[in-house]
Length: 423
Image (cartoon, rainbow, N blue to C red; front, side, top):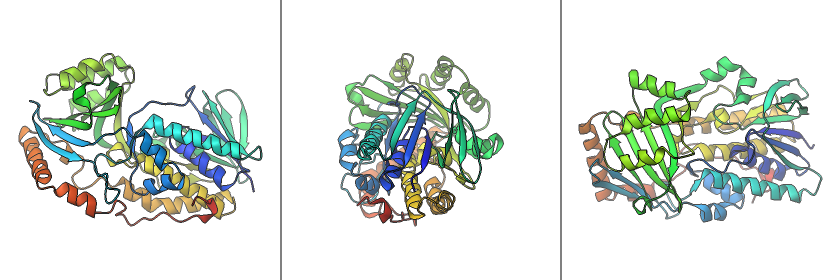
């Protein structure tokens, strides 16, 4: 039975869901709304790991992803005087576990464009039976449901009724608030202690090839990544702990961008390495944003005929590197369960919730000692971290580990959905 489906958000999860749902049933009528006036082609570097890699292959997009990769060859660590302590190369063998730098590093805007374009190609194949429509500059303002459908009001004053609504609107999801109430939605947002800022600058030859980082006493880290030939991505991170600095960073999130830049400049000024150059370039950067790293932890990611996909329902935090993979795999499982349950929406959503739960838990795992182990407080602790990393790389333990330990080392395996006809 064809469904009338609304998807809220056109990031990674929105177009991925639209693509997979239409593949499962070309008669579905799918509308994707996005609050921005056009497809957002900016954002930081993301990657695909574990189950996300074979999933992109199933979609026929792995070669396209490879063609758009940023070419980051690995990761290097420096001290305040510019001395390199470690260099860890990416695992490009096609086997084993991906390291900090994945073989499939791609800019967020590029993967969003790929999924959007592929979804529109799939819509053209439907030849008028069903299809996908994108509406930009539009938001959901209200959502109510009964056993038969979901009534939605929009920012342009229009209303619609849908068989299924999917919230793919990010970690600050309005859909999540409408489903569970603001108090429960806010309570699901679990801060992991780290504040971060990101921006892009014109590249220097020094910035090429490798991600480069420096640890600074007080739980601070600055890093550059070769995002594109004409862009270097800069990342500022801080684990301040309780106290004045934490309060300043938290308060700055609600301030204008110029005030945020001022707070971050004061926090990192005069710390050595390339910091002065990077902070100077920050002042004229037009894509700066700062945020608190968090995970979204919900007891359920569905309610009635409404489901959450990706960061809106289970953001794992950038620290895991699993956000994009989770969004795509969530889209796959939801489309698969709808096809398997012959478009019985409530039953399909219950199955989606049940199947995804162990995978979400695995993807949220941050490892022992996180975040403190990555943000040493003292100069001595930083020296120990550099020494340990130097030993590991000198003995090539990192290369052995990445090749022998499988990427999909968790216990969760994605179900096979022949109903989707992807192979």
